[in-house]
Image 1 (cartoon, rainbow, N blue to C red):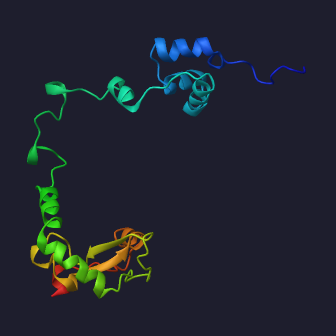
Image 2 (tube, rainbow, N blue to C red):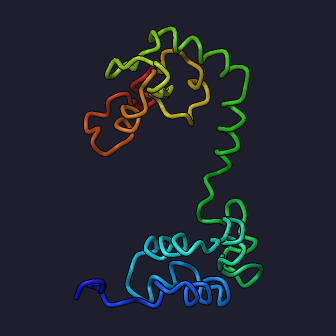
Length: 180
């Protein structure tokens, strides 16, 4: 019939109902959406349409359940090698290495050596293409970290390829023995 909507009206279309659920009962847009089998964006659309103020990110995070805290958490107190994700402190070592003067002095030399181009595909660095300095022999070999012959300039997509399973020929990857 003319003037009637073809879909059955939903409670979240009503401003007062939506305000009560979202603001008074403090349900999230995702919780309301799952109740009616619609997307979270559909609820956000109606909140915006009715000019109902949505929560800030800090408000959302303060209400979010972040898991068990303190001694009840199974990972509580598991530091360094007692944590299954521990990698021997290499992240701190990497961080200090990449901020060292030795590394900062080699970076411009690598860029000049490869003429500011990806060695694999030839893309130039023009502000859009991100270039990465890649270690051919693993970073774990300290004596080769700043060896200019162990460093190559790759664009971001080629660098991802080198470290992917698609790199079946191990392009730009060598063992320490191969490099010698």
